[in-house]
Length: 451
Image (cartoon, rainbow, N blue to C red; front, side, top):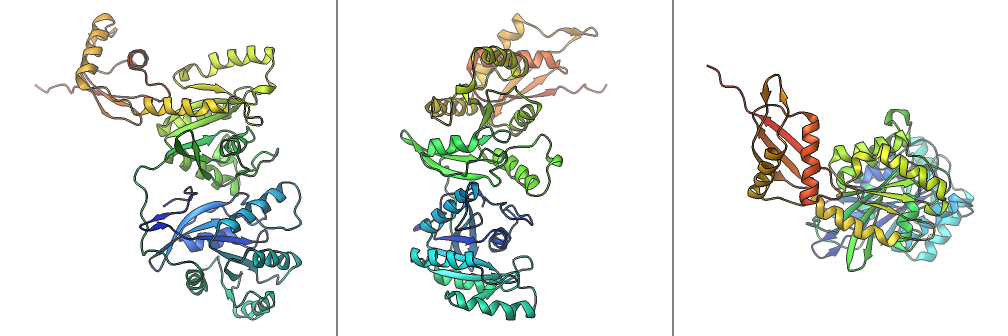
């Protein structure tokens, strides 16, 4: 199971119940979420504001499946980006079946905690109170002052060490509606699209425009998105699973703290996706950072779309230089569909889905063995491999063992030049399409027989 499954888990009789985890910033919500789901997936760092969007995780306790929603720190008096984070927490409570309210037992009750309690009471949802950071008997005695919040018994837990988590989880199951014993992952399901790019190019704005709601926190500051965020979006007659990701740093080892783990999760999101939509800022030059992201997508073997955002900021002069940059830097990606759009206004955003469908079609294209060898036989006859040291490598036979991405194995009499391999790839695209997908070519030279 994965942190990217934003829709509630499907069980044998319907969706699993949803638990929203809320609380003030830096009370240990994400650490507690990791404790509940039994693995380190939520990004954690010892400073407030690391989690910003609502992020969904699959969980199972005592054979019962449920979905956990991690939220950003809830500050009722927030302004600016913190206000957007608070709004995401309020949405999570609205959609949830029960709420886990996390309080820092070492701090006690604050005015903000009391303000959150009033909002939770108004929601009418069952609330389980978790007194976190209870690492010893002294803190446990202090935690009982949280009875004054009026939410019933505070469950003393240590998210870091796991103390008391079993009793808290039992209380959570009592608060959640009954579900079947086991969940199952949907076979097939919506196609998975990862929205990737360096920080502040408009990835979250694109997702919000597609969803027609403020699903993800958007701010002018780079690096607003930390956890990958899913959204099931119906466009036309199809439902797609879009994954908004954190901006990938130029080098992962240059990032620190939560940015490091966010970069790792973004790479995982690319691996899990079928198509990666690379969002570039059309008003800026194509950077080394962009090229590294492209290489990450190609190494993962994912279909790719290049989407230039902020097209409203591109004048004639910038358009001229952008075309030169594309010819120079993206010459090896002529197979990737390209769209120009403006996420802020929605201009040409509708062109994304046709490009995705085209890329998926190329990604899953298979050529019959007979047609493939007929094509290669004609190609080799017209353009044989160059002679090297008095020897000429020949292609004896070829097959396509797999798709997604299309992979070809060439059985040869000797090692083919890299330039000749690129020539074969180019002609394969001209003959059969393969728009939007990388092509993998593997060589298997015939071993020399020993006398």
